[in-house]
Image (cartoon, rainbow, N blue to C red; front, side, top):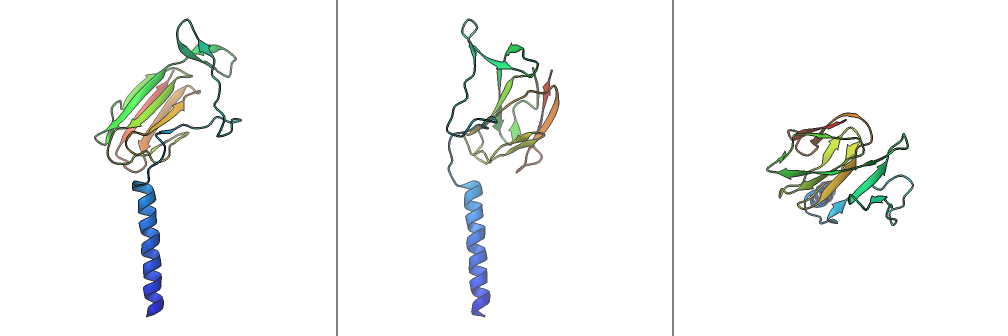
Length: 147
């Protein structure tokens, strides 16, 4: 009988720990993927067009194009832009403005759990359509169309 109680207590502690990690743990205010070849402690250098005050991105063909940043706000359990049209090389930044945690998932999109105020960004380097959703709340969906 004592063995069953001990197992019950241990399982309860593990479950409470998982719930704490998923919903209550505070992490840094921004979550940004680290590019290949850059260690966590390095900041990648991006060329800047001083005249137009824009970040430049080199795309695989070797051309330099002016890139833009787009923001998607997560509020009231939805993405404020369900469909977003952007150009190749542009970056989308999702910001969680809900009290509930959210997690961006889709083709090549996998954020950590975002608590209120946290962000996730992704630069789109391929032309095409990317459908995404919140893996915690699958009814939350969106689409990025890259031209």
